[in-house]
Image (tube, rainbow, N blue to C red; front, side, top):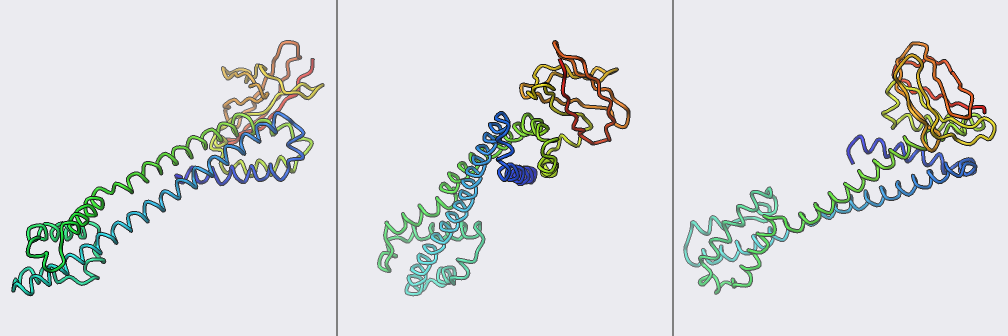
Length: 297
């Protein structure tokens, strides 16, 4: 996850934990309970995808390390055979070139190891016939060449990297869906609990404030309900009088409007069959003022 995604994930987890600890409250509103369960399912998907991504990162590193160790081992072994041949043949230059300690082979950088291995393989292939008397054979060199190619191309790690990217994309996609669910449904519907369960509502806001970038914008938001029955009202026209800012409440009764800060604003709620309602508010810069409304018929 990116830093932003990690911050959002942690705070969403906190908010959902708060809801989980108060399911007796959330279950009082079936619509909210349904959205909450959907959010939990998305969080589970994120956890699963992130676990997969992390395992692929670990597997990539482990596989790459194994490749490096295997290549270093066979490079050191072939160099030792060639050193033995050079000593018997009196080839001082070759003996000096093949006089490598384990530390010199195993302690090199990947690029240095690849270069050393390539040079040793090339010389071993040229001297294969005389080297056979010292334990060299076609099979060993073929294995050497295969390990060097795999190390240079990184075939196995590249597979892991592709799977890691896929898992990372799943994390991002589900986190985006979770963000939409919080912003579009859960946050607005939480207003249904504001009056009856003020502490529960306040604790939710504390946890959500951490991850709701939209709250940095100056705006008003809330849920519109039927005053008599308490049900949410969709399709309510919400506007700021004297401005062009208007919107309709969603199916969950929620709305939001960007607002000018530090001036008195009159929010007008209108729906056919209900009396218009006006509410005057003042919104601080950067604040998302929560203002719900209950309309009378």
